[in-house]
Image (tube, rainbow, N blue to C red; front, side, top):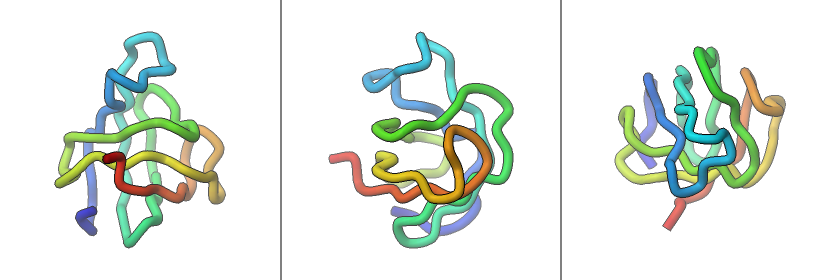
Amino acid sequence: MDNGKKKGLEKDHENNGDNGNKLVMTGTLSGNTLTVTAIASGHLEIGTVLSGGGFTQPVKIVAYGTGHGGVGTYTVANAK
């Protein structure tokens, strides 16, 4: 996982609980903690796979921190 600001991340279409809608968000990734500071569309949930937009490899949300679908923190793991 790459640390630093991530913009325009998109939900992976293979694990798409949002009926084809893309997740557009801004946040930072530090270790296994994703901190989401803004969401323009879509939502996050456990099992969501994030890729593109600056990730060097896909990550999967495995637990809620302070976020429960929107702004806040999430625990992530490599999605491989």
